[in-house]
Length: 373
Ligand code: ATP
View (tube, rainbow, N blue to C red):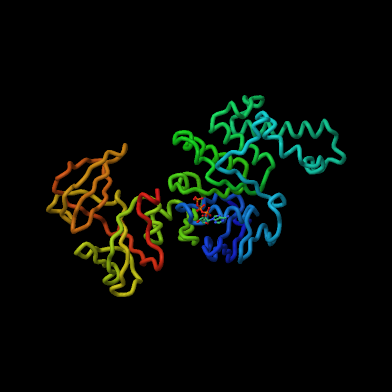
């Protein structure tokens, strides 16, 4: 269970490399035992943010607070965090057990066995064995303890890398696209396993990915980033259902995004007609983005729909069909379990609560759909 205490706080963090500002005044807090995902397209600054938290990079401005204390100048090995990178970086000349035990063997005996005065070698060995065995069981690799890491598959090696990071009992685990090199099936399995482990151990996870499905599957909280700025913070459902702007709407899930004008409260004008919506509080005739999810558009008879149109393409996607329907000069992406062949004349309808109105973004533009996936 996520606790209601702030473990990490980033306050006004900015960072530039040369003339490029990659983080712009970031404010964020992370609670104890929270699974937080930093999600955004390549180059948005998420890895840099993780590296600042880990101590591998220093911010130009702002403060990083850990458990109430300023971490400025504290080197990585003195922070109560551990990192798992995309490349496993295991010691290939050691077997699985020794890879996981490595960090523990470097610890002072009294650190390893706090509360035991003058621990004996035997006690130390037993403690290391207890912890390594527990971690190998947790990542389901206990049967492989004596194997050389070279003989393992990519997924198994990543499990060992995770066990090696967790065995030191960090308060926070930083994970930078740790499943990026795995195939889709294994990736999905590992996502569920990581989430289970995080809950069992009660450790705070900060996870970096550009994969929205991965973020939705695992996170308590998703931080959507673009161009060095936070776009939205929230749980997966609220970000999916109530994206704050067109960037988020396009990055998380599919969207139809139309240039529109908010005529007055509850009335928006787009694609040559007025639509009833549930939004209010915009300036009269304010230019806005109107966002409609493909699964929220109903295909009905041409004469009963809000917009008459023609099916231009059909793709079977496994669970649903994805169709593009040209109507009122816009190519609408529609998801439906029923298939309408190319050339069919159809009507499109959408209920007011499924029309989302957003303020236009000031500087940034929404990414093309291919870039963001
Ligand atoms: P990716 O998923 O591609 O790693 P990201 O969102 O994690 O992207 P960052 O790795 O934080 O983004 O990089 C943000 C920007 O800063 C990029 O343009 C990158 O090239 C640049 N950058 C990162 N580290 C350095 C560095 N040490 N020196 C110079 N530029 C850097």
